[in-house]
Image 1 (cartoon, rainbow, N blue to C red):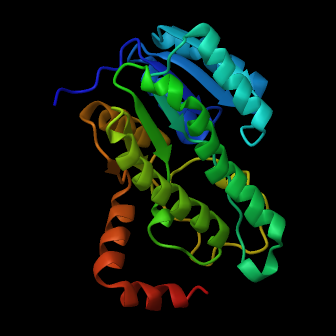
Image 2 (cartoon, helix red, strand yellow; image 1 turned 135 degrees about the vertical axis):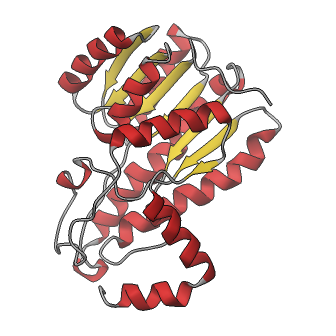
Length: 262
């Protein structure tokens, strides 16, 4: 099958104001796409829109709001229906985390992480499906995590949300095949972003310390390439790929290593 064309494709990207989302917006702008970027910070989005246009985006606009709000999700879809009538690509990138033992957190931490990382993606996708079904070579990109393959201590809620996102992505990939909508799962490992500077809560420091990560620019380039090559899942960080492989074939070994940090 031929590579997917990105030029002039209409793309909705959530969590676009920083980290992987921001770099992915910049990378896609260089491909002359038409971008609608979403995040909570109106100022950050406004500045990014200017940068996207300067890099060659065919068009760029933004909507500021909370993707966990059903009314805001509906307003995004209404905007797309009014301005574009169709949608070619949806990139669910918005995410949040918390550090600490599960027993030290309350129910609200898990619920909020699931709302941002899982339910906002599933429900925005549900609303967007009619627009995607009429789009050109439509694609859904769900930014997951290596922790969606192997749960990690002190990241239990985040791991749960990413397992859910990956499982749901695999299920809908089959359901949407007959409608011509493809699904790409992106499972990065540690990435050098400010993601961990915006935790919901931090009751413990990660016992393994700061890990060297891949740059968000490198992740964005790999995601863009995977979109073009019609991949179903990618692992941008080699350490993440290694962990997935070892956990698949020697899960007890990984358990013993993880037990040191529990």
